[in-house]
Length: 197
Image (cartoon, rainbow, N blue to C red):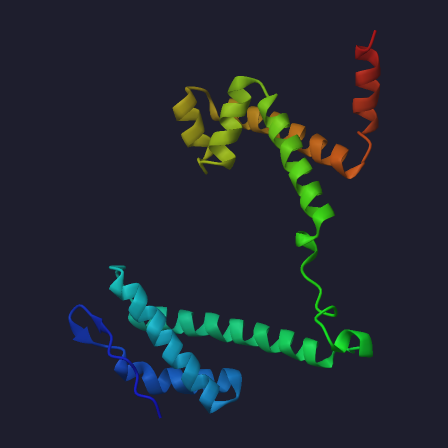
């Protein structure tokens, strides 16, 4: 059996006492003692790496278990993908190559082009917003500020922030609907016909 690495918190050795407990937890999760030992070792290595970067470890046991739980999830994902690939039917023509392994649809050229066009259209829509509306939208969506923080920074009320963000979001939704080929609601079509001379 592997010996757990020696990890310290506040100058004391603390992780060694959790090794057997963690190993039992992982054994119940993956149903294989050797895999559980590998995952426990990897958990210790990752927590040690985090500790060595200067990251403060407040609750070492909790961090160790969270890391182990995430590794178990990754292990299950890999196992299910491996099982799917092993059970997928392979024709004689495909047996010589990797043609039966399709890449993600997001990497297909037409999807990449569509994504770029969508992004360009949304950026253009945001650029066309009134300056104060665009500023409130950018502060909210990209800087992650709250309505109150935006109001304080822009010198406006939170109700005005809400209205500006509503205008910006509606513009983005209309842009996305156009990209998806969805016609505008009847209310907008009648309003735009009235506006035309």
